[in-house]
Length: 85
Image (tube, rainbow, N blue to C red; front, side):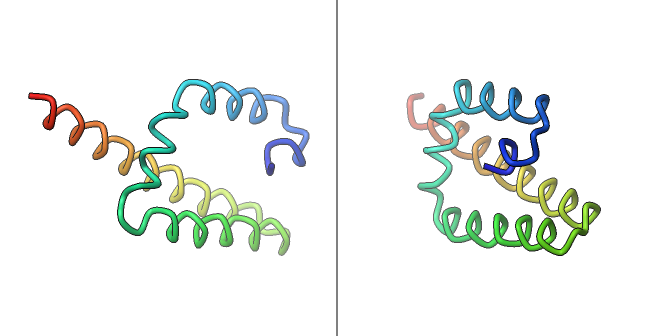
C-alpha cells in the first residue's frame, strides 16, 4: 500500500517482485510466535512516521521491519530444512 501511494515506481516493482518470489516465506513467517503482532506494531511505526512527515524515521522503521521479517523468514526456512533431514 505504501509503495502504491508513494508513486515510487521502483518501490512498487520491488514490492510486487518480492510478493511473487517470497510469498511462501512471508506467509510462513507470520506463523512465527509473535510475528503477526510485531508486524502490526512495525507497520504502525512506519505509517506514523509517514503521517508525521518524518522520512528518516520512516526509513529507519522500514529498515527495522525488513530486517526482523527477513530474520524470521530465514529462521523458518532453516527449521523447515532441519525438519526434513
